[in-house]
Image 1 (cartoon, rainbow, N blue to C red):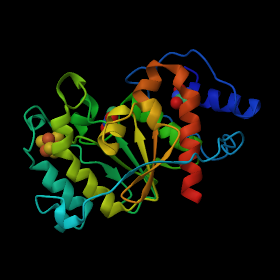
Image 2 (image 1 turned 180 degrees about the vertical axis):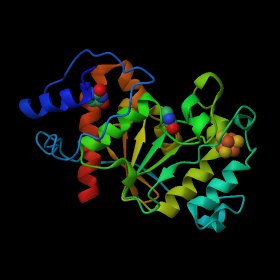
Image 3 (image 1 turned 90 degrees about the vertical axis):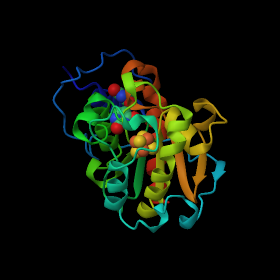
Image 4 (image 1 turned 135 degrees about the horizontal axis):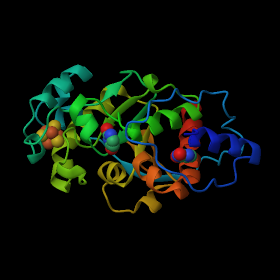
Length: 254
Ligand code: URA
Ligand code: URA
Ligand code: SF4
């Protein structure tokens, strides 16, 4: 099957980044992972939107106020160990593996998804299914190797039937994510989808309202975009996603 994402990017390059590519089938769940597009596959700067103005400001609690002594944990591995033993919400029951997140502990870009699905629960790693393959390609399209970012989720244990995490589950797990942000100290956070954006920004706005602004999360610029799994279902969101990630990419250089 042709690589639709690369095809889309090539088209965007030819059209100056302003046209929407329509219609495509989702790759099969077992499709082989493809290498990232790479920085030279497309000039992402061509037609990139300007950096939008400021949005919401979220203050993070000081480390000693995070609860459960999380502020005393000084490494991502220490957080992962706490997560592995966590029973703070009902999601602990059904899990095979916790999925604490992974990547470069000094990443300049941090991604936040919703929570583990079946593949993630089976492997203990974030974004390893079809949505993960697409995510790797999206990063590649703005010249960012996946290994260079840190990828986390709102909840670290798989919700049954892949349902959205409930508000109390997200709230129970959020201190881990906050501590991860404090330790990684990224230059930019990219929230993937409404669940992540709501959990991080307080849930008072829709995804549409949260996109198109540069929020501040504990002082870190935060951009909101669609979830890769949603993109696989709705190709109309590709162009806005392409714009969002190019905003995030520009913020990395700022
Ligand atoms: N093409 C895709 O398949 N996904 C995107 O997000 C953008 C273009
Ligand atoms: N995989 C993840 O790790 N998180 C998501 O939100 C979706 C898939
Ligand atoms: Fe603990 Fe988070 Fe897992 Fe709930 S989802 S049990 S809070 S690690």
